[in-house]
Image (cartoon, rainbow, N blue to C red; front, side, top):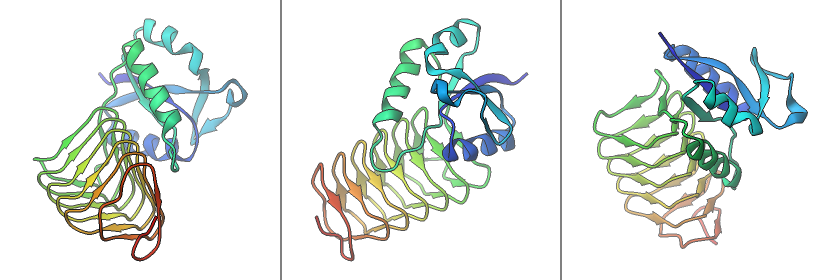
Length: 210
């Protein structure tokens, strides 16, 4: 019997998570929660039929799993807020890994993180909670990705790279080996990072500057 799950946040990111969940066939999606203005809309064919204010009631009805399906473009504040809310209610947030991703059995991945199709994650990698590793990203050996990070489509992280909490690595960016990127950093699309980046900056270009 499949476990029931509520998805929190409708939109483009939610579409991909729905697709992965259906492919895995481990959960029954009971619906999506979002703001009241979106009630009645559908993501693929899954209805937005709850508001975020109803999450406690959903948990009390016996649903034990939730997943944050709000995307993140640079600022993960809303994802963090919803993740913390779901945890405080008592929901379990699974790790969701596409069947079309290649993930080393040695990798460690935190709760609430999604690994999208085409991703490659090699041995020794550690990924925190509530992270997104998006389509086609390559995470090389011994990389560390902290909580609430978004690794956008087509990113390449070389070996022993470290990405700090709440950072965003933009589409197609590359980070060379041993580089450390701080907390709350935005790395622009297509950037090439060849040296460490401090906290709280926006880095872009080839090579990346801030």
